[in-house]
Length: 73
Image (tube, rainbow, N blue to C red):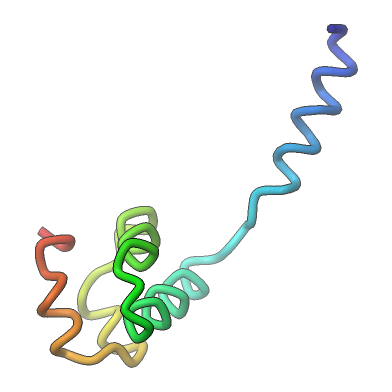
């Protein structure tokens, strides 16, 4: 495959990946915690190195954050 075609394919693949900000990741993590989707919330927490304080300030319940405390350590 030529360089041009490879570059076009890579560009198309990169455009499919979502681009979210840290604030969006916090909101998504809190929503996933509320819906008991721990694995998806863990994905955002570890990817963006979110702290428990950030999740609590965004509206997560204290009990939920304490339940997943092993992710933060």
